[in-house]
Length: 120
Image (cartoon, rainbow, N blue to C red; front, side):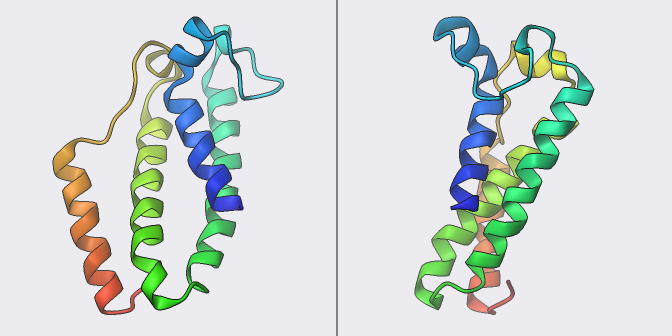
């Protein structure tokens, strides 16, 4: 459950501009998205990291045949979270942050190696 929550929150943070401006939606209570600052962004990021930590504990308990896909998604979304963390809050409000395709391919390859060698 925590991993799904982490994935959703990453998507909410990444799509902040579209959700708020076009759909009038805000998924972060007690956060003024019109004035999103670094402190608010870092509070959100820390909350998401806590969800990722709990989610990872669940991944290592999955049956081996289920780990690869879930672990790959975990690595992708965690990479996206790191990019969001390192992006100024003003830029997050004005652009959609992405992981380039070449990095996605690298994450997939590394996840596959970890899966094959059981290195979680």
